[in-house]
Length: 112
Image (cartoon, rainbow, N blue to C red; front, top):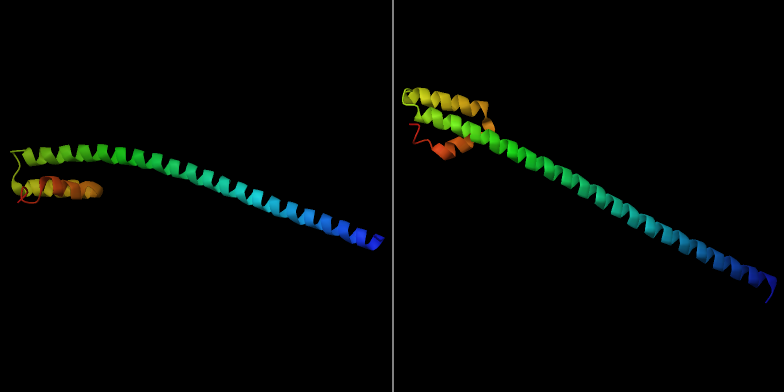
């Protein structure tokens, strides 16, 4: 073999090795980035889940308090129906998230 064919062969081998190592680097880096993104997403979802549990607990506690207040208003024999309705409406206005549950729990027929 002459010098030109040997140098072309070495050039081809080194170019192939460089391209192969470059492709491997891209694959490994892409896999690492994908794993990092997956881990970050997992941490974010865990954080959102924990905050959601806390928010549901707070809402349930608030709901219990408002339901007790609504029951006390309805069971109060000293109040007229009109006053009960006004107090329940004001209670619902103070707590709009729970107002629909008050209506479902006690119903409108009890208020009229």
